[in-house]
Image (tube, rainbow over all chains, first blue to last red; front, top):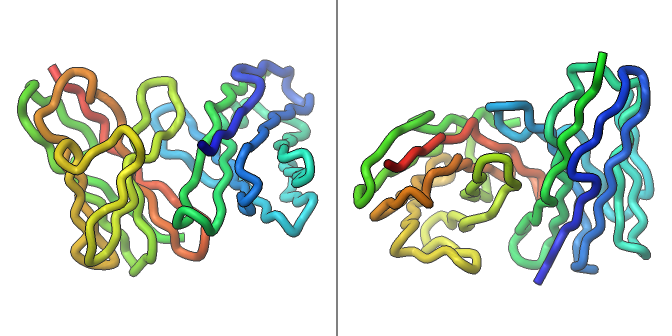
Length: 113
Length: 113
């Protein structure tokens, strides 16, 4: 079945450094790739997304890249700040299956001040 | 994005009982979904709530255990039936407002004793 693998499971960086989280997906029909940030005790919040007709998208300190051939996509956070500390989930979905979204296992990011 | 509310926000229940969780959206949405998130884990899709027809359940989830209603385009309920301690989890509804993008409700934290 469809699967999304996410690495690393835990990431610790120094404030100001960059953080990169990588995901791979199995369903070649997937064409939409959102990223969610979940702070402790809160709901997952959409932070950025990318569609399959785009290779890269940037929003201030956050960027996402997509390689459809290799079926992997990545989240890049630059100039990390302590408030970036959270769990980040990648996900993949497509028109088939009624927009069913498959989530990665999550990456717990710690930004040390 | 839509404003999504869930009731109750948390509950403690006795095994063998049932709990109905409500999800209300402030605007009409096409897609509504129910997820389960166990502590420290990712999001697992339980079912897609279809307006006017039976919900579509994912593998491992059945209607008898998780009956779902969706009477209109702004409201859905999920019932967790005949609960056991293994049902202790966070239950989240999500809505799709345009295509694949999903936004999550605040979640219902359930503890079964």
